[in-house]
Amino acid sequence: MPHARAAVAAAVAAVFVLVGCSSEPQGENVDPDQVDSTEIPELGACRLLTPADVEQPANATRTVDCDDKHTAETFAIGELPDEFEDVEYDDKEVGEYAYRTCTKRFEKFLGASDESLVLRTIVSWAWFRPSQKAWDDGARWYRCDVIGGSATSEEYRPLPPTAKGLLLGRPDDRWLICAVGETVAAAEKVPCAQDHDWRAATTIKLGEPEDKYPGDEVVASRTKAFCANSIKAWLNYPATFEYAYTHFHEAEWQAGNRRSVCWAKTSD
Image 1: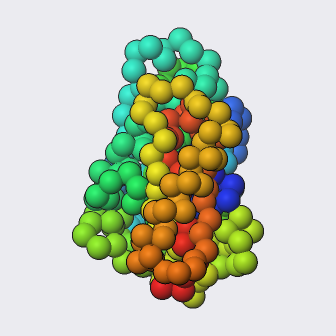
Image 2: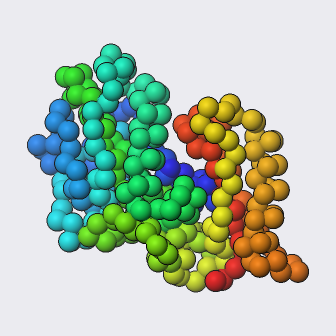
Image 3: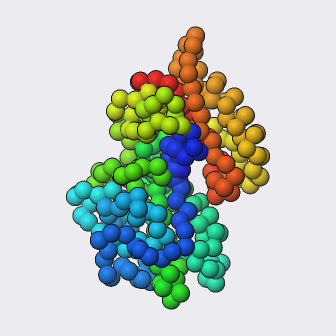
């Protein structure tokens, strides 16, 4: 997405971009052939997207050669299920479907060993739907793009020619999330290859997909207790250590997230 990409960590926010309902603008340097198009977008296309572009529900930014500088790559496309044929353009269930779909395919596309690793990467994803006009004309597609940053990024980092398999094996620190600052909440999020004070080291799974939200207090309490033990073990049981944690709230839970992120105070 996104806590855990927002709040105390803002690490992988969401990664989770459940955008609003305005169909304009559709990004900078738009391609007229993409504006209001009812055709499903091209899989594997690359673009120079900005955080401002990602704030919009639709995007018609021109594609670029993936060997050239780019900050986004389309890793999943498809038609929305028939159940969305008659829903409103900004129906929240469309966003929830996109969240589930993009999250699952994002993990597979990056080659991540598990969901925990995905939450600790510097890259995230955004999704787009057709423009309002195209939606009114019957278009019902979605587009998931991997982007070189998170929901808190002021600008995105360039991606390699393809981000496919980016997290296979032991991921390069260039793509893992760390932070610089006294506290994680106020820290600047940077790739772990740079100098840093905190590293997103582990995560905790707080529930299954069908579980109801247990409440802010329970989520915070479980996260704090787990992270204290998890980070101590990750640091090889030092006599003293510092840790922090990031947790989601009900809105993110309803969108599908079930994890919190644990941070270790370390320059390694």
